[in-house]
Length: 359
Ligand code: ATP
Image (cartoon, rainbow, N blue to C red; front, side):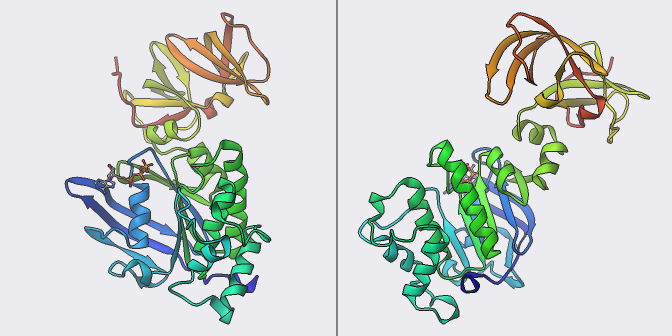
């Protein structure tokens, strides 16, 4: 596979801002994507993911800031002068061209790398995405997943330094999405190509990435490994957006031992981030960290709904008017009184509380 290996170049965004008329789509975004890294931009609709990708590809001119690929400042370069391959949500294959011709179309601006012929290069790419034997087919005779693999092969054909993927799986059904994301990851790993992936699906972002940037309203909220983003969210926004979570408005009422009060109930936590007595904070407790039975933190709640998920049950419980989600091994009866336990070390304290006051 030496022929398809890209040179590894990173991508550096420095204070990048993009505006559409009055709308600020990106505000001072700085990100550093390592060579060979699989880096994902995730966030709710309208947060600026696609705009970031378009600015890297050269389709949007930033109002300020710069884009570097490797050691080259590409901010002023046209898209075709940048060494990037792009796959969009909608496959955008040419219906009048067969699969081979669609892949070869990726080579219209550039010869295949390493002196390969176009035919050799197309064969190589079809092998890479597991589509050998389908080269003569018309795109409309292919499944959605196969079409997206053709689009991936086309984007990779010229051997770009950077691969940009904009929601490439979101038009596919859930099961296919899960399968194809593994294919995308394997191809990326095999090539070692620096990849920037856009998705609004936080579970996909966690599953596939080396690192994730969570965007919010045109700004970077947090960058980290999937584990760091999930286990140590930097803000209430990230805690709420990534994975299921139970968020409670609380007020810090003691630092030794650290406790915060939610509607008159004191809840212990064990980490003491940068919070002080009387601060309004958010307590975040993941559903898998609430157990039925005793714990150092105990909350008396009532089961309101039970969902069977296959590998676990998801209980919806009412605790003092708050809905708490609990991942449980066993079914519980709707209406049952339960004691929910948590370990203080699993109670995350986020400094951005929204309501409440020290009394
Ligand atoms: P989605 O997940 O819905 O695709 P996104 O995170 O990719 O969203 P962007 O498409 O980057 O978000 O949009 C960022 C902001 O810029 C939004 O407020 C959007 O309405 C605005 N925007 C995007 N493109 C244009 C445009 N061509 N003209 C005006 N505003 C735009």
